[in-house]
Image (cartoon, rainbow, N blue to C red):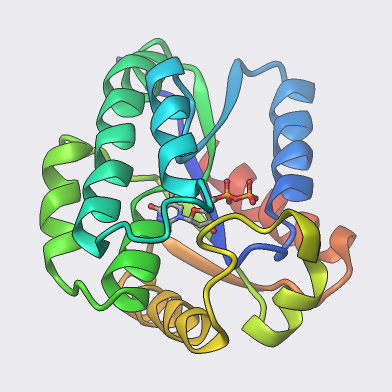
Length: 204
Ligand code: TYD
């Protein structure tokens, strides 16, 4: 049975995920593969509506568990309606963020701990990426790369929150060394792309 590759990108905002996703799409398309690019929270009409609620700066009073469940709800819709059907057709799926974001941001950042993995095991129906690229950039550096004026509710969080998120990513990378490839995002864009290309070509 043909099965597409499920590739995810993770890291702090400003780590350069979008640029690398464009490069991955180009790499796969040039080789004649079917590929879809998608993102979380989002990727379906319903998930994009949930995204608006989550990221709305006016929802400052949102409880951490509400937040975690909304990310998971958006993900459930995305996995069942977009990701799984594409993979089953042999289409590769490149996704900007996935469950690792929830573990890092809600589990470590908000302090919800292991509950986040449990919720998401249900939400994603056991769907796990084949490979995840963690674009590693220290929070103080990544903060300097994002535009102050357009910050969403999560980006508005204080530096200690982002430090915890970063620590969460480092822990995840240690926990799943087979799946999560850590790449220094402070390197040249072309060097990062090259590392990603080598890993993907090995999987094709
Ligand atoms: P993202 O789309 O990467 O933001 P932008 O459009 O600004 O590049 O993600 C939005 C925010 O949501 C980002 O700060 C990370 C956060 N997030 C979580 O906290 N948990 C999650 O499960 C996901 C997918 C994202």
